[in-house]
Length: 361
Image (tube, rainbow, N blue to C red; front, side, top):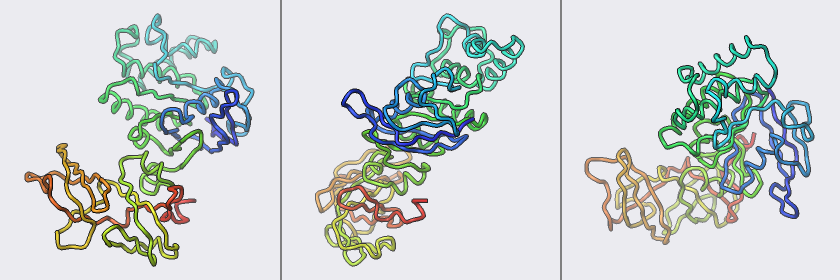
């Protein structure tokens, strides 16, 4: 098992710079997710760690060993791909045992380790079947068992659940998290699915245009994103303009809140990130942000309301559903915010003004 240290790595294709200068530390035994939109460089970085892509600058280390020029077959990595990449002509058992046979281990050891991982991934009953006889989720369990059975130092997973249906994704998400913790292997996981990343990760690196925007635990990234891109990419949020005046946050129409974290900030125009669940519906005679309900969607446990504010912004709020809908289309509403949860960014959207020093440690 290895920690991974990535220092100032650069990836170019001719004159096209995909990753300009990226550094990150991945701790031993950690499940670390690279998250971002298509084309952000996350799979490129994963392939650099694997040795499938060249490195035009910087260094990658497994523990203290620099691996830039090390052959992929010598890096002792396990790899799980989006398309499973299991061998259709081999049985489930032979697929799992493939890497062990390549390492010329004795038959007894191969059988024992293969059985161990067939059991771990709960596919022992399918050991003698061919992959084509199994479901997508079962095939992905084969791929995971095959990657882990060789006891790799690092496990790399590239969008491993994207080909599965919604129910299977949820099931395999739990399997991957449980297996990774049980085996204790350092894992780098690539996905564009925010919910998937939040559910399985110890830490997440949010990427954009080859640059890491924020590295942190899922809760930190959701509650205190470093910039507007991270706030809008992770979960759902509403971005509303406001002003800081004498330490108070002032919205269109004059509604204001006093935030301790903004004390000492200069007067300026700002952008506020308010998640749908962070609004509070108030009585009409209370002070707040005024708006009109444009439409709503009932989704069982919760109802999503879409409201046009007096400043012209359109926002989404989420309320627990009731037998009688709380709001109707065309109704005027007054909204307050849960001020302890709001995030306030400078006008450029690059800096979160309410992230204290504790969040940067």
